Image (cartoon, rainbow, N blue to C red; front, side):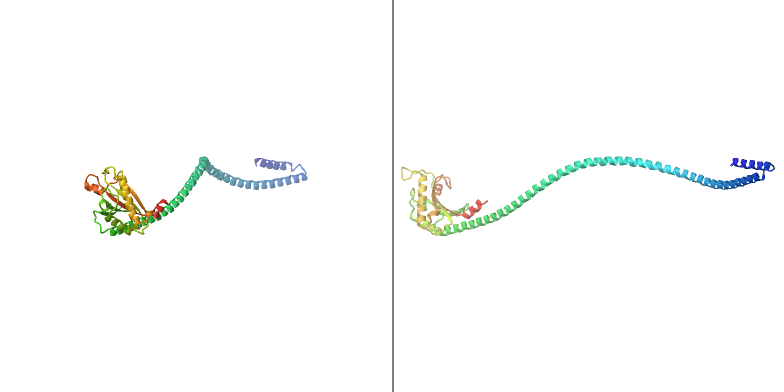
Amino acid sequence: MTTFLNKTALLSLLLIFLTSCVAKKDFDSVVGEKNALENDKTRLQEQLAVLGEKASRLEVQVEDLKGKNTAVQSDFDIVSKELKNVQGEYSRIKQLYDNLLTNSGQLNTDLAQQQQRLLAIEDDLEIERKKNEELALDLSKREAKVAELERLISEKDKAVQLLKKRVTDALLNFQASDLSVEVKNGKVYVSLAEKLLFNSGSTKVDAKGESALKQLAVALSGNTDINIMVEGHTDNVPLSGSGKYSDNWDLSVIRATSIVRILINNGISSEVITAAGRGEFSPVAENTSAENKALNRRTEIVLTPKLNELFQLLESY
């Protein structure tokens, strides 16, 4: 700007100095140049003013931007710190994620194994369930069989008691010392003393004994639902001399056979009756006195209800 003013003053001086010596044409040229320069000056001054205002605004903007830059730098520092923290947290979480992936693979393997075990357990449970159902069904069948067994036993007990009553009623006219009727182990035992049936050492049934046997046969006649065992018993006194019978075994068997024949001849089926000799080996009392020996010399007729239906049921268990 100073250089421009100096040039203007110098031109003015030259203009004054040369006025007198230059031609009018030159003067006019100089004047024109002067006016042009003044116009340029005015224009430049205006531009200068405009630029000054712009410079002022820019300076304000620069100061404002400096302030903003400071704030932005502060924010940048904060964001940079947060970014660093986030990056550290990201690294930590990524490590956890990688560990999780590794553990997840193992967990998947363990889970698959657990599922296999669970399936095996479920299969076992299904097998046990079926077994339980089969057991329950079998138990139900067994309970039904037990109920049927109890019914048959009850019927058998009733039959035994009825049989005892029939035999007792048939032999009411005989003394209790001569015979007895009792139930043992589900069987009816008719015990006949020797004095009622035989003379000492004899195998022939006397008249009183035969009468008793006939009454018993009448009571049992037609009853095919019982088995009859006739057992001969003796005391322990050996047979004397060289008689007809070699020992008490012989005597007990022959006596039982004699009784069986009388019963068969009076209506008892030979298919349900058996003769047996027990000799001296099944006493009811010790052979230490005459009274006890008399008790042991006896014939027992054992009446057993046929239990075919009951045995068939038992065999099915």
